[in-house]
Image 1 (tube, helix red, strand yellow):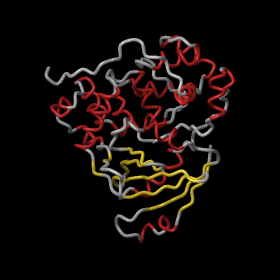
Image 2 (image 1 turned 135 degrees about the vertical axis):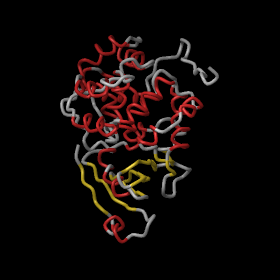
Image 3 (image 1 turned 120 degrees about the horizontal axis):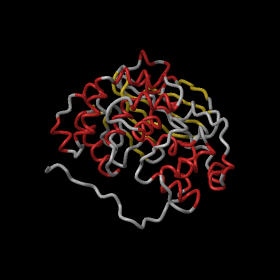
Image 4 (image 1 turned 30 degrees about the vertical axis):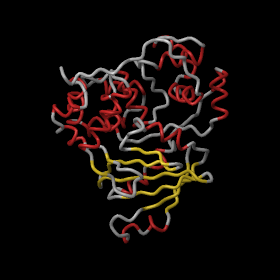
Length: 323
């Protein structure tokens, strides 16, 4: 999917604009974009300090080579209107097409293999796969989410980003923060990881990855297939196929990534496609007809609202801080 960007007068006069003045642009995608479903999936829980939903506006913070930036996105009459603040405002505006799925290529995707997928694809044509291009942030977030509940992971992410990140510029609807740089993640003391209940295997993995963040990012962005991307990421201790898939989904908008090993995913896919839960092998068999677009199918399953009734015990949070 392609589209075009139009700079407004504010953005065109960026060099002359006073410090702190917003930059603006309008992105006109070639096809419909459901902004909340596309970009909103990047939010890590309702308290995420890097992303806020404020009515029709999605606020997002990011790090750029020129500093922290805040980006506000609003869909209006087939256009995406974007406003950015901070030293990295121009860079933030450049990310808008990718965030809105401009590089999401659905060629070869055939939803007709299953009536549910066909129906959801028909009624929700604006669901795209967002691409942030920011490998380290996606990887660090995925590592924190290993082997814990979403509630635990979102809390840890919120506390660490708020304490070690940078206050976001602009008139944000609540205090927001840009995530720490790789160097800042690397310097987080062990006791701060412990206070937010991130276990040593996960914190050590983030620290190790932070040391080579640039080289990992270059290698992953250069890889052209899912297998190559998995090889890049899983070559590091503490990173398995689940973490690799979660990173590929957020950083690259990978249409075929499947988070094998997830606590709930196989059950949800099995229930949606057959009416019964399944395991990882069964999930991969069910998704096989959509090879190349398996993440797209998973996103459509989530968008369907169909979910397996909860009967068994939930995975309960554990507090390891006193151990």
